[in-house]
Image 1 (cartoon, each protein chain N blue to C red):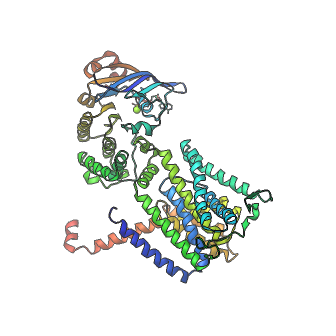
Image 2 (cartoon, rainbow over the protein chains, first blue to last red):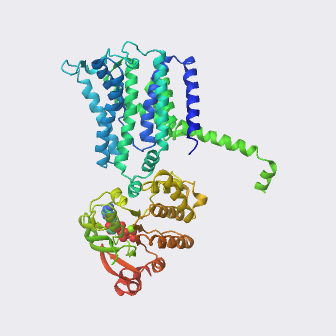
Image 3 (cartoon, rainbow over the protein chains, first blue to last red):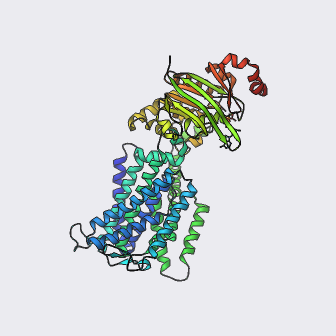
Length: 341
Length: 238
Ligand SMILES: Nc1ncnc2c1ncn2[C@@H]1O[C@H](COP(=O)(O)OP(=O)(O)OP(=O)(O)O)[C@@H](O)[C@H]1O
Ligand SMILES: [Mg+2]
C-alpha cells in the first residue's frame, strides 16, 4: 500500500476527469448533478457502515440537517460561503453529541439502529409541525411541510451576485465528490482508518489492545455526518427548496439500499449504488406503468440473494479471476506440465 | 523486594444467584509467572474479566502497581501496559496476521515503529509464511499464536493469558513456552491452564480456584500432591 499513494491519486483524478467530461454527453447535467450529490450521500454512510461497522438508520437526518442549515443560513446571510460551512458543521456537531451518547453509553448495534431511526423520525415530525409564522430562525421561516423556498443559492465566494448554477454547478458538485473521495481514501489509509476497520472487525479485542472504541466511533460517525451535511447543502442548492421529506425514513432506507447494492466495505460501491439506483428511479419516474419503490425493493432482494456483497466486490472478484486466468494461460508449457506431473 | 504489580482485595462477582468469584485476594509480583488452575466453572475466567475491566466486580477492589483500577474500562486498563488473551479466540478475522499485530503495536508506537515491531514478532513466532493471510483462514493453533503475538508486541508489564495452550500441537506448545519465558524477562504473567504438563514446565507458584474462591496457593509440586486439590480437580481428571 505504501508508495502507491501518489499513483492512486493520479489514477483517481484521471478517471474522474474523464467521467466528469464524458457523462454529460449521455445524461443531462441537471440530472447528473443530483446523482453526484446522492453519490456523496452514499459515500457518507458507506464510510461509517462499511469501514466502521456503524449501521446508522438515520443518515438522512444529517443530510436534511445540512440542507436546512444551508437554507436558513443563506436566507439570513445572503451569501453562500458561510452557509456552506455551517451546513457541514451543524450536522457534524449534532452527530458528535448523538454519537457520544450512543457510543459512550455502550449501546448494542440494534439499539444504535433504533435510536438513529427514532431521531430521524422526530426531526421529520418536528419540522413538519413548523408551518406556523412563529417558527422563525432570524429572517427564515421554517415553513413546516411547505419547506423553505427562495434562499440564496451557491455563488462565487464573496460575490453574492455571481450565481453558480447549471453546468458550472455540476462541475462544482463533481469536484466536491472527487475531493471527498480522496479525503476518505486518505483517511482509510491512515492509522485512524485502519484502527476503525479493526474496531469494525472486533470491538472487544480493540478495547483490550487499549483503544478507546467509543471515542473513535464518535469521531468516525461525526465525519460521516459532515459529509452527509455537505451533500445536503449541495442538494438544497440543486433543488432550490428544502422540505421535510429530506428527513424521511424512506430517504434513510434508500441510502442503506445504495450501500448494500453497491457494495459495503468499498469506497466506490456506495457512490455507484447511489447514482445507479437514483438514475433508475428517475427513469422509472418518467413512466407510470411500474411503481418504482417496487423495483428498488426487487433489486435489493435480488442483490441480497445473488450478490450479497454488492456490485463492486463482485466485479472485483470477477476481474481478479480473469487476470489470474490469463496469467495461467500465458504460462510456458513446461511449467504447466511439471505442475501437473 | 519486588514490586506488587497486581493485587485484588475481596474480589467478588455475582451473576444472579451464582457467585462466580468469591472474595478473592490475589497478589502478584513483578516478573512473576503464576498459573491459575481449577475445574470447569471454578471462576478463573471471571476473575480475569474482573481484572481486565470486561466485568465490573460486585464487590472488592483491583490494584495495578498500587493504583486502584476497580471499575475502569478495558481500554484504560490495557493502556496501562496490560496484555490480555481471552479464553475464546479474539482476533480480527477479516484482517491479515500482519495487520492484526500492527494494530496491537500501533497503540503504543508510531506507524513505522509499529510496522517494524510487527515484522519482528512475526519472525520470532515463525509466522512469516502466513503474514499476509487473513486470520479467518488460519488453523486454531496458528490463531492462538497470533493472539500471543498481539499481546507480546505491545511490551506489556502484566500479561493475562486464559488457556493459551488449548487445542495446540506439541510443537506449538513448545514454541509458546519459549515465548512466555521471554515475556517474563520484562512482565509478570498469569496463565489459566488445564494442561498439567505445561504447567509443570512453566510455573513455580500455582493458585487453585474452586467454586469462585482460592482453595490453595503454593509451589507447583506441593499443589500437585495435595489431597484436597486432587479431590476437586485432579481426581476428576484422572
Ligand atoms: N456472564 C455470565 N452470566 C452468568 N453466569 C456466568 C457468566 N459468566 C460465568 N458465569 C458462571 O460463573 C461460573 C464461573 O465461570 P468461569 O467461566 O469463570 O469458569 P472457569 O473457571 O473459567 O471455567 P473453564 O475452565 O470452563 O473456563 C460458572 O458457573 C459460570 O456458569
Ligand atoms: Mg474459563
